[in-house]
Image (tube, rainbow over all chains, first blue to last red; front, side, top):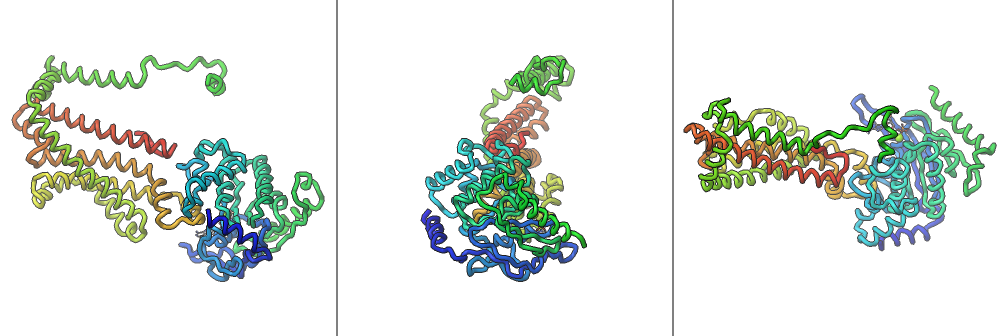
Length: 272
Length: 271
Ligand SMILES: Nc1ncnc2c1ncn2[C@@H]1O[C@H](COP(=O)(O)OP(=O)(O)OP(=O)(O)O)[C@@H](O)[C@H]1O
Ligand SMILES: [Mg+2]
């Protein structure tokens, strides 16, 4: 717990972009049985502290690989990922968290145990982590389901648990790899809104991979559009829509224009 | 509940029929039928009494020589427990190592599965030539017999741990040790439990067979000794004790499975 507070304080004191997450000429080549496979090539961008950034691009363009590199789970073949001043080459759970799809919940643990797991791993005292986990579950509206196992929860509930786990870990950066991909449109919209509400309260840096362009425009401050493999950044699009975001924004011309622009880029980038 | 049933039923269907006798009752009836056959078949001379002693005669003989049987049963149980420690304990540790360490997995695992395919009984005579025919040899033989299935099941469980759990744990800062304890072991548990089931059964077979082939004491030894002397009732009482032993092992494994199943829903198959 002591450590958690320290992290929080550091963040409050930081500001001024000290915790920006940067990719610097990142290239990743997988060694496969069929020879080297270039997943992403020469990718550079900056994710400013406290912003919500989307990552979109055709399937297989290297979004997940890029996210894994940002999480320190995979190392770039060339270039580097930098957070503040430090290069990221291994996981930094206190600073960078990852929210995966629902399936990464541990089936033998209850929702609460799943949510408090990152705290358990870093040796946080039982009563403290339980309290924090319950708080986070309340935040995503699952307080009553704390003792249920994942198989007793719906897809949307599982995803809420995964998000609660990410926030319970309390890193300054949350990387989300298609967290809502397995959900139906309605649940996905609701969860998107909930995520925004939590995010607005906790002001974390979020990098959000999605295939839904509507979702990308609706949620993000900035969207990074990638080309087909080997993935490059085609363009960074600023989403100059007011916050808090509301559904009526979707009917606006700006929203439609931004969405169309991203679509044009992806479609164009897909063509040889 | 009736609502649910009604929703899934096609219109016009009748109430689902409850079976006249439940599965538990049915099982008991089967058992009873077998026991009745055991008693009646030799008495009615459907089979020769030399081949099968009636249940009552078997029990009477067994009870009259209870000291002898109890002594030998204790020997068998003792050997079995030691053999289980080798098979289950050794198999689990070896399985964890072979499943978890790539170099070991690639070199040793294929060899292990080949050995598992060999009917080891054929080498028992050679085995006794090395270790003798005392308790050590059957403990070792039973242990080895159960070791391989336990090892293979454990290794398979470790190998098939969902990589998404591992990646998630790593991103949350799990050390290597924490990954093993909190992800690999629990995820492999269903497979490990089925290893225990097969391993324990094989170990029991190994011990009793070893006793039957060459030993100086134990239930298997008693069975062989009495068979050569055509003491049919003694033979069958020995067989009965072996069945009892198997029943106890089965019960123990089942309660283990139940616990594992409660802990890891939908993954542990009850056999
Ligand atoms: N571990 C790996 N080994 C070899 N190749 C890989 C590996 N992981 C990914 N790749 C390859 O790298 C490329 C990029 O994969 P990645 O998963 O990053 O794409 P993605 O943009 O996340 O795709 P999707 O939108 O479908 O999730 C793909 O061609 C994929 O086949
Ligand atoms: Mg992906």
